[in-house]
Length: 437
Length: 172
Image (cartoon, each protein chain N blue to C red):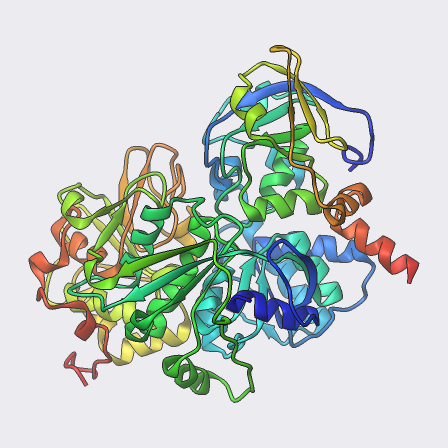
């Protein structure tokens, strides 16, 4: 069995499963947000269940249109808040303690290796970074899971991505996943697991693994998953004292395909409008003029992302006529960025530093594009109208490319304006004065 | 929720779209500050085909290419389509979250690559969900569709996942 299949089998109470089997699996955590939970709550009421299956296994996070962007959004957040109170849901987070759900849940130790997580949000696949099986579902699935504690799943086949070598220069986990989606297409892993393995995994930080697993859905995958290694264990110990199980793929696990990736050959990569699979190396993207740069989201709003961006923005100025907006993933990341002096670098360069929210990524609020405007964003989708007017354009890239492009006013290779050796050192923690610790 | 229950074939006019129709164009996020199906239907397909909400009629069909419904998990997408009066979506393939959402809310869908590729806007199609058949009445052709596994059929026949769970609870 693959790693994903082993977790599903364990949660379905079966000794083994095969690709294509339909199973009912127990969920360790079920997640909803201010857009998907209101529909789930409506459906939950119709099940006739008087209470959620386990008050400690449901997480509700107001992050998409929160802080409330308008009256209707406020109504949705209120409905979710009242439901959380009524049901005694332990993991409801108000805006002051919350952040973007997929940055928040791992930070709070609510998802650990070997667990099975569903969320009414497509980027729930993020938690595969820690060796969990996690997948996005709809609101009705969330409603059924809140009532029953279980979810129906079709056991996925898998594609194996064997990573070798190390990323070089300013290339990051974001570039790797854009590169892979460019290779296999937006339905290249449809219904399947993307299982990452190989000696190259060890060189990817946990933050990078979150970014990579996060975008598995952009290749159509059911989930993306990483093996549990030293970095995972050390991360798990830092966020939770809970016990967890480690699963690994059998030596004879079946994969529909194996894709070998030499990390050293992955360049900074930009996905052109209007599909994440329109990936091109930075050299073919440079010079495209921009109106807005967004750094943040469930894909790239973690502390290393902010460090890399700040290292490039520091002491430079955002180009005249360009808006640069930076969104930390959570309140904790916000505080850490303050302590390390990153906020000063970012604001000092003429960028906006906002409260955590999904806001601009989905064209919700806090940075909507007008007709004909063009943005480069560290988010995950560049569909028509994704960040605003249907006549606007979104380019996807890493925080390093985003920061460099904000300075240049057009898409720019970070190596052109910052230390070409770059990204790895910039991702490491800094003391309050901006020097490396 | 009766579309999937009735054995009678679905007959309707095709609205044709291409590959990778994503949930952002099916129902843009700017309208997700509410979830009433009728309100969503008013903006269905707006960023891909602004005229859709005006021209769609009850019982019409959406016919599309590969990976229909890719992107966000928003159930508002199949809800908007269903509330528009669309009787079934026929596509070459579906993105996985859209696929399960459609089954869970009782929106009929059918995976049939040949019929989806062949059909043109305005063609009259007849679908037999139980038998898994698509007849293009305009072109005079017939194609077999991928049948649903029995478990999914039982959810669809119950009228959706909630009804399925309620029936199961009632039996206990």
